[in-house]
Image (tube, rainbow, N blue to C red; front, top):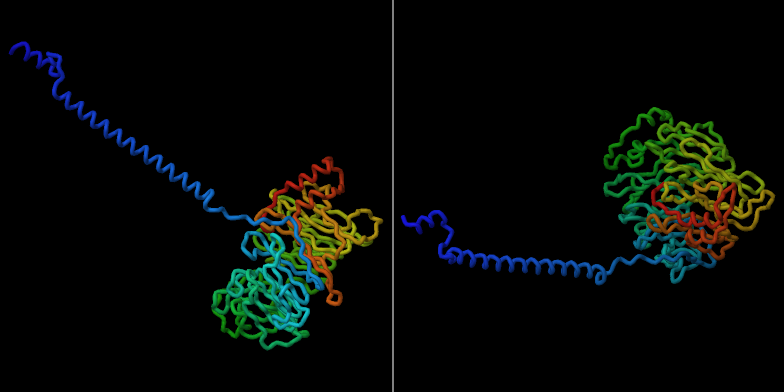
Length: 521
């Protein structure tokens, strides 16, 4: 073997002549081709990235500018609607009638005609009662409907009435029951079959499970003719009478009431008998006694109070207020509250602990406002103020700190020797400032009805007033008004009922910055 071949064996990759091998040329060509492919792939990726970015920007632009966002209705801070030659009824409820996410106001008034709607349109004598829905944003009329010559019961917010989401039930005199769609003001059904003209319906409307098989809850009305009391059962869907009237001189359990009232024609409903109620049932009379026969005083108000496991019953009588266990009806606590002047309201004085605001007349034109803890009946806060020209019911609004603001009425001066004036003021109280009241507004007109609401979810805190004459012999100007609380707070007067170091403006600012909650009481 010569030296050249030996060198080739030892260094096979080395070209003794210093020239590139053919394999190197081929490898270089393949490398160039590979780099060219990678370069094209990189350009494709870059183009795809910018195309996707452009598409995202187009979508964002479309949703931001081309496709409009839902327009939030602009609500006036305050509005007033007036009707002439009108009698006012103490009926007011709120509901989102036009589905703009702002609550609207439904009222009942007696007058000759409203705009182009007259009593004769529905066959009633003039004047008659009109059910009216007003927009919560500006007070404009959403619908108006003449409903009766006289009304003995009105209730709205009844779910699935007539098959619609929410409806109102009007019971007129002479007797008839009329169901109305709350959203449109259209009549759903009317029931007036063979009844005596002097029948009286005692409220409220009792909602019961479906018993005629149409998958809509049905209704029970308690009627009174002379000394005779009966139960009338109506179909919630069509208003038809179900079964026959049942005399309720003796009481009946719901389990036995259906077959006894409906002649056994109702669908089978699996009722479960409560052992506690079974043990307390008066066997001879067939009912469960709630108050002992020896209990004295007239019953003025009944309120259900949420408990830990079930609702309890607050019985407000002319001499005492008593909380009864909702299951066994034994007394949990009682409080001497003679001369109650208004219907109590529920709110939160402590965080998440329900309280009751009660107003009690103490003589000499003065009243005591009490806030009572529902668990124990202990008094958490109280103040004495002068009565005004009327005593509208107090109201509460839940706040974001799990408490409530309490709203009540009285005379603007706290002087004990002052005689009852001819005006009335609205006061605002919050438990975090127990020695301070805000006087929000002052009125000289007769206030027939007052309540406070959140017109939007957790915001838009307002109160609504109905003012005007209440007697048919003296009709006059009736007004319904909505007022935003923050507007009144800005111009309010700070009243100190104890030592408080904060300035008046700091107190107003604190109330102004309060946040509200739609948490139910």
